[in-house]
Image 1 (spheres, helix red, strand yellow):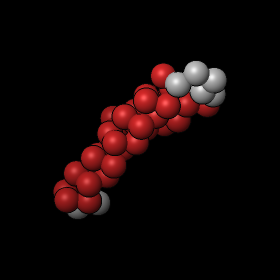
Image 2: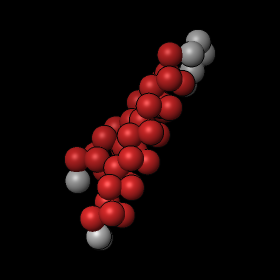
Image 3: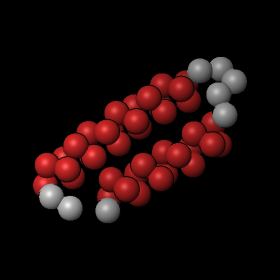
Image 4: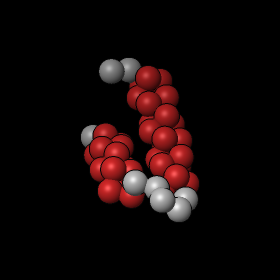
Length: 47
């Protein structure tokens, strides 16, 4: 995996995480499934 792809992927994941966190603030949001998705994003960012 080259460095520019990695940087692009990190930016995409951080943006996705931001969207998920915003959705989590909404009333009636499926918090458990959003949290699972956040964990996947976090794990991929740490890899």
